[in-house]
Structures are given as structure tokens and as C-alpha cells.
Image 1 (cartoon, rainbow, N blue to C red):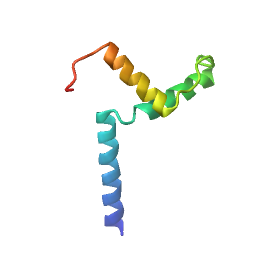
Image 2 (image 1 turned 60 degrees about the vertical axis):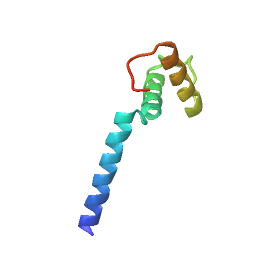
Image 3 (image 1 turned 135 degrees about the horizontal axis):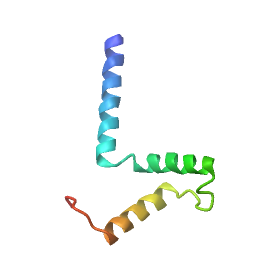
Image 4 (image 1 turned 30 degrees about the vertical axis):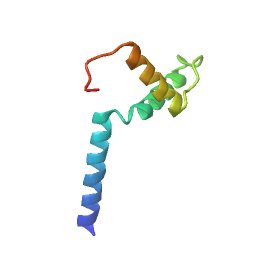
Length: 71
């Protein structure tokens, strides 16, 4: 059982790493940053975007300001 738990933990770690590399965790980072700013009172005037709004905004910003990327 300990071996199986170790394999699961390793697989979760690999998945976490690749989500970070691919930018899939960007929305979670945005939410954490927004909550931290809200706790300080610095971003109270900006409401939290939904995940769909966040990715639309991200795509629009990348289209408006293209940088070196594969696609």
C-alpha cells in the first residue's frame, strides 16, 4: 500500500509540474492573487473574473501584444 501511495503522490507531482509549465494553473494563481489583494484592500474596485472571462482576457492580451511563442 505504501508503494501505491508513493506512486500516486509522484503522479500528482508530475501533473502539478506540467500544469505549471503549460500555464494551466494561471487562473488559480490569479484567484489567489486577487484574494490576497482583496485582503489588503488594494483591489476592492476590480471584481473577480470568472474562469471563462479570465482566459478570454488572457487570449485578448496575447493577441494584442504578441511575444515569442510556438503558435
